[in-house]
Image (cartoon, rainbow, N blue to C red):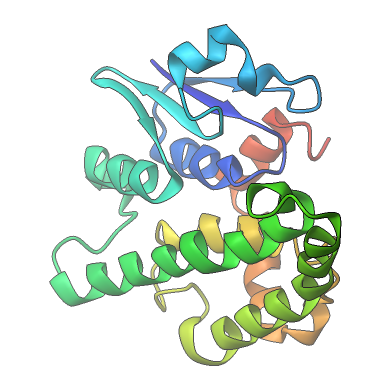
Length: 208
């Protein structure tokens, strides 16, 4: 049985949803970041990076959202979570998820994790002030050029969708009105209706 370590509403939600989509048995383990559990010796023995997600598999521990998403899609091909038969389509999916990981998530992290990049208080505050504009610009690009609709890749749901949904859930706190992004907003609402999304969100205490 798998074990997924998460913090409620963090990027680990994407992996949690994808795991639920596979139908595989798993245990979801909550990490209390406010209490510093991610830095405990017990968790660092699982994931020395001290972050989430971490997926305990029969082969060992896997970290980093894009890697976990591809692993789940490859391990459970019947769930049809990635277009492995089409090299171009799969590369596009990887490109999309890489953008979310390397650019969009980093924009967001500047609001709450500025100390990763700077020690000077003024610099950290400057990063925070840029978050609304940076997130708005990134999602405007997704809205205009990257989201094919109704799912990220078009007609087929894939590992890109729970990842986009997770980062879109941060928009309000980052100072961006999702209603200004009608296609992203429609995708977000569509994701909310999926049983796997509801299951993961209930397990994380995000919905009743």
